[in-house]
Image (cartoon, rainbow, N blue to C red):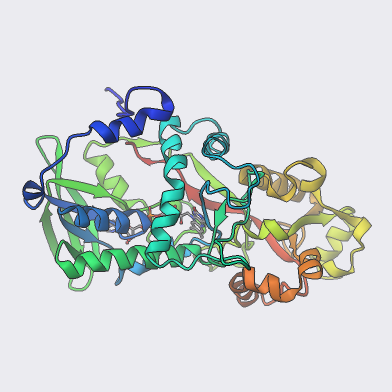
Amino acid sequence: MKLDSKIPEGPLAEKWTNYKSHQDLVNPANKRKIDIIVVGTGLAGASAAASLGELGFNVKIFCIQDSPRRAHSIAAQGGINATKNYPNDGDSTYRLFYDTVKGGDYRAREANVCRLAEVSSNIIDQCVAQGVPFARDYGGLLDNRSFGGSLVSRTFYARGQTGQQLLLGAYGALSKEIHKGSVELFTRREMMDLVVIDGKARGIITRNLINGELERYFGHAVVIATGGYGNVFFLSTMAMTSNGSAAWQVYKKGAFFGNPNFTQIHPTCIPVHGDYQSKLTLMSESLRNDGRIWVPKNKEDAQKIQKGELRPTEIKEEDRDYYLERRYPAFGNLVPRDVASRAAKERCDAGFGVGSTGLAVYLDCADAIERLGKNVIEARYGNLFQMYEKIVDEVPYDTPMMIYPAIHYTMGGIWV
Ligand SMILES: Cc1cc2nc3c(=O)[nH]c(=O)nc-3n(C[C@H](O)[C@H](O)[C@H](O)COP(=O)(O)OP(=O)(O)OC[C@H]3O[C@@H](n4cnc5c(N)ncnc54)[C@H](O)[C@@H]3O)c2cc1C
């Protein structure tokens, strides 16, 4: 067995630029003779299909849902990182590269991370051109906020619904190609198997979810863009269709499946609240910009809160333990996600957790509301606060949110 990740030769910073300059090209007349299947209409699949269609290939794109716009990318909340350095706070391509490699526990493929950092600004430009309404500052420039694990503000966002807006942009580009005839869209189709001819992926078998029939489609190449596999866990922040079925089919046909254990535990999810829920809900990472995370300093207070005898707003400032700010003064509440998750679990396991189960910590925006005003916080996170209120039946403008780590993001998958 030979593992070949096909990372281009040369110095790290030039690998992909060199590759792009020397890769084989296909002449326009030949492109029209090449069929490409794309499975998945999320940000990955929709943008790949739109780009391939625009390049002149014949594309067929498939999704389980009744519309490409329902891919789970729609759930992404906090934002997308790019190194434009608009806030002039010292960001650079190198820093995004470094933060990403470090955030990936030094296990990411460095050449690919380097490429991601290089093209990050172009991606923002492309999204803006597609009409994505990123937040803007008072002067009209694109605004930035911070994500965990970095000391700069490089996250471009559209309130707490960045994924939805990005997906609408990608869907717009895809629709243009569908209208042109270069892309054919197949909704309500679930991929059931991969067709392999002479060791190459040449097609797929799908089930038509409307009439139950099996269908087959040919392609000279098959792109699998079927998203994460969070639903192999009982509860996660992912949709029920993020089940890894396509990756499993491809694996059975000889592809490798890599690093399934690389699963991110997100620190700010709404805690489990019953036996019958099918998924968990994320409270965006971005809330850690303005929210402070704490638990009671005294175990007795935590126990009273668990029994419903004490409210968080009744706990005095000096009796609160802002444990991330205490332990990690440089990053504070913006430590990387794994660090914040471990710290929350440690506090709860030690008996300082809140909520009726004791498996929750507070995310408190009271300081920010006082400093900036409720209207500013509402403009930044209004939809998240509303979602929290609907699920927990508490108003986070008046009382701190309860959060707890949950399975969120899967980084393993089909080995490429
Ligand atoms: C709650 C939440 C919040 C997030 N917030 C952020 C954020 O703020 N910033 C950030 O950078 N990332 C965020 N992420 C991660 C990011 O959203 C995902 O990594 C990304 O959207 C995945 O895109 P995708 O196109 O690969 O997959 P998806 O959007 O999941 O699309 C998968 C597609 O594949 C199709 N499909 C799956 N299986 C089959 C099958 N067997 N047959 C046919 N079709 C199939 C589906 O129908 C769908 O169209 C978040 C993720 C979640 C869950």
